[in-house]
Image: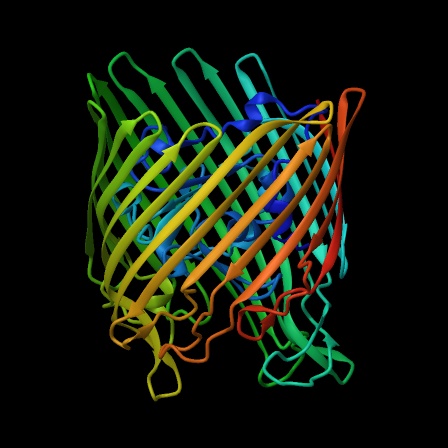
Amino acid sequence: MRLRALLLLLAPLAAASQPAASDSTLGEVTVTAAREAVATREAPARVTVLDGEALQAAPDLAELLQARAPVHVRRYGPSGLSSLSIRGASAPQALVLLDGQPLTDPALGQIDLTLLPTALLEAVEVLSGPASGLYGSSALGGVVHLRPVTDGLRATTEVGAWGERRVSGLAGGQRGALAAVAAVEAGQSDGDYGVADLGRVGQPVVPRQGWDSRRATAYGALRAERGPTRGGLALWAADAERGLGGSPSDGALVGARQWDRQLRLSGHAAHDAPAVRLEATAHAQRAELRYASPFPAGDRADAIDETGRTTTAAFALRATNTRGAGTWTAEATGALGRASHPSLAETAEDRMLGLGLAGRHVLGAVVLFPALRADLHTPAGGEARLGLAPQLGANARLSPLVSLKASVARAFRMPTLNDRFWAPGGNPDLLPETAWSADLGAVVGGGRARIEATAFATTARDQIVWAPTGLGYWAPENVARTRTLGAEVSARAAHLVRLGGATALVDGGAVATVTDARDLDADAPVRYVPRWAAKAWGGLRVSGLRLGLDAQALGARPTTRGGTQPLPAHLVVGAHAAVARALGPAEVTLGLDLDNLLDARYEIVRSHVMPPRHARLRLTVRAR
């Protein structure tokens, strides 16, 4: 069920017989860069907002971010683990939020992006740069905020190469003070495309084996509002299974398999009093990950079949006051994370209490965004650690078309439960990772065209690195110091033109990043961080027809801590066509996609070859 970049880069699909004038504007709002919602160009840092039908076409968050955001997604093949790197930071240094609340696994410190289908999302915001002053631990590199769906009515089915099939549905609406929405998605893929060993010349192309995958997920929410009071409950569940490679042996599949299950319940309530807005949020999440190798394990002496379970619970209480030109939000938070696994010395538990203060103050054409947060983390059997995160951002409106952004921040990341308690090797005395970061950017343009450029610098200390001990196992320690310098440039444009007798919408965009991330202890580039990356897309929509083209280029990536054995640079191109027609109260869209049009042979992670050229057909029916 791999929907590659072309579906994502060429959104939105044809939605009407004539493009609407509003389609040519680029207005976006972020709720991630500050406690109060602001326009992205008025935020104190770079925020990329992805929404519309790009979300509906992408099968998972990994595909979407890889195609459109100024980030690097480390993908172990189309069905394997996908982890996130923002500005050269590691995956545990990027915080993922669902409706404003952390989604990160407390044992691993990250979440597999392929488990998060975009059919359940209304928008995705990517905040580049540290945000521990707002969100605490794990926001050292940046934040990805997922906004769940709120309403709509549509159904989508899709078929593609190598057994790929996917269906999704969404239904939601409002009646009086109550609103409800439900969304489901299910998909599977055999993933048995042919590959050859890229490191050995003349090797035959053979089908991959043991890389099948399936996923089912559902989301439901109920909201109510009466006068100044509102609240709601939401439930998210996911069940996924994937093969991790194998080969035939004695008539059985020799390889590993993995099962992921997630169940999350969240709630929120808010009341707007005359002088203050009061908010309360809470969530509880249960996750289970089973790993078996080889599979079927049978009675082999080297067989592994282990299941890890994690439980998280958290709450947040906020009070927001607006007076004159300033808005201030005070916050108190608490969280509990617990993990059990056969390789953990004991049931490991991490507790956190936090206090934060964040503001937005207008001084003429300049808006300041100060924030300060203190988190007290108490791991079981370890010493309590205090994380402090001050930050200050600013946005200066120089003219209606030009804005400057600047920020400086301190960020931190606490060690994960696996870092502290994994047996053998866990180290309960690990120090938090810390970093100082500064960036300066400019936004030029208006509603139909916009360019944003950002330069940034980060220094980090006490990075946690797992290394061999010489005793037959690996253990984590605080060793690495890193320094990252870089720049990000993005451009977007949309324009209405006359084409024959019809009005056509021409739109497109591009994102380019340059990142020099160095491990100062090893005096070498950081592993798997590309020195440069570029993504571009464009399309034409006229009279219900949508045509488009996209391209992604990625620079070489070192695969060792010493900066050697780099994966070569690669270019992937895709093409897309879709036609939409009104049928009574419904609109039907049929899309054909050609991915990896040039049939590039490439790997994002060594030994995990990505798919060759292939096609995909998608049918969507939605209420008009």
